[in-house]
Length: 68
Image (cartoon, rainbow, N blue to C red; front, side, top):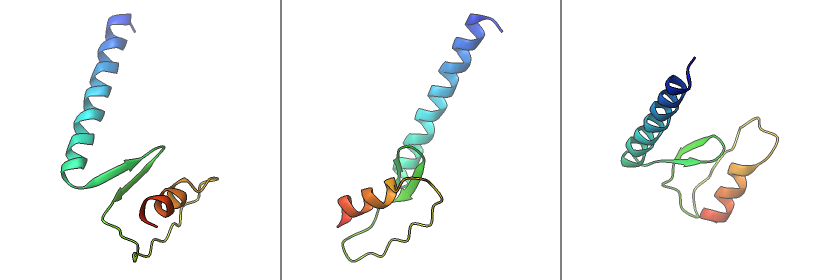
C-alpha cells in the first residue's frame, strides 16, 4: 500500500472518529478513556453498578470522584 493511501485512510479514520464523537455529545453520551461510554446524568444519590471485567477500576474511580 502506498504512503498516500495510508495517509488518506488515517485521515478518514480520524474524521470518522471526530464525527461520531460529535454525534455522541449531542445525544448526551460521554467517553471516558480507554473505552467507557455512558450517559452522564448521575448525581450523588445515583447507584452505579460497574460489572466490567477489566484489570483496573478506572470507571468506578471516575464515578466516585465525579459524582460522589
